[in-house]
Length: 342
Image 1 (cartoon, helix red, strand yellow):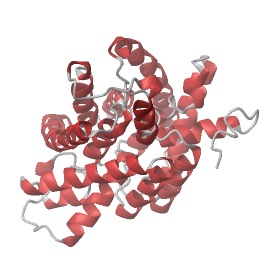
Image 2 (spheres, rainbow, N blue to C red):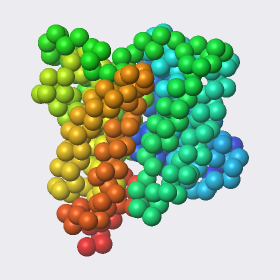
Image 3 (tube, rainbow, N blue to C red):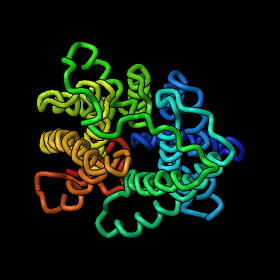
Image 4 (tube, helix red, strand yellow):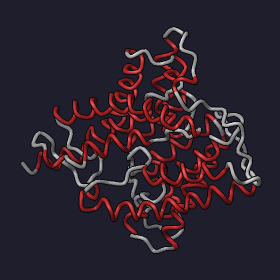
C-alpha cells in the first residue's frame, strides 16, 4: 500500500502529516502506523486520543505558520513532541491518570501553547546538535513538559489535580511478589507508557501499529520493554512500578533508537541497543529519585540521556555503523542501503 499518496494532497495532506507525527513518537514515518496508535489510545481513553490529536495539530500547525522545512513537516517531525507534551499535561493533572480528564478552557490554551513551544525547541536543539549528527529525540517534549508542569502549581485558573500517579519507585509498596501479570502487564504497559497509557492492551495495540511500518522496530521495542522489565525484576524493583511499565518505556525507546534506526542493525549494534535498554531502566529509577522532592515525572529523559550518550560518540567506535538522522528511515531500509554500499 502506498502510504505517501496523501502527503502532498491539497486538503488531506495536513491529516497525513499529523498522523505521521503520532507515529514519529516511536520512529514511524507512516500515517497508518499513527492511526493504529491513535486507536490504541482510544481503546484506553477517548480523552487521551483527542488530546494527542490536539497536541500534534498544534505543534505541526505552528511549524506551518512559521514556514519550517516542508520535508520535516510532511514527515511529522514537528508533531510528535507536541503530542507528548499535551498528553503529559493532562495525565499528570488529572485525578485519574489512567483515563485522564477533560481539560478546562485554561488548560486547553495552556497545553496548546506548550505543544507550539516544542516546535521552537525542536528547531533550536536540532541546530545545536546538527554538527554531531544526532537528533533532538524527545528532549523538546521533556524540557517543555517539565517547565509547563512546574508552572501549573502557580496558576489558580488551572487545576493541578492531585498528581496522583507515583513518580518514584519508592512510592510503590515493595512487598508484592512478581507474578504472571507482572510480566505481561509490565511489558505491554511499558509500550503504552510511551504515550502515558496505563493499559497493557493499549501497549500491544501500539506495538501492532509500529509493526505496520517496521517489524524490526516493533521487535526491538518489544525486546526493549522485556529487557527493562526484567532488569527491574532482577534488581528487586517494586512490583507495582514494574507492572505499571515505568521501568520499561524508556528502555523500549532506547532499543528502537539504537537497534536499527540511528545505527545499522548488526550484531554489534544489537547488543549495544540491549545494553542501552538495561541502563535506561536503571537511569529511570535514578532520575525518578532525583526529581521526587519536586514532584516531577521522569518523562522520556532517561531514553534521551542514554541515547545521546551512546550516539554522540558513535563515530569513535568502528564496530558501529551510524545512520545520520536525515537518512534514517526504517531498520530494514537502513540495513539494505548499507549492504548495497559494501
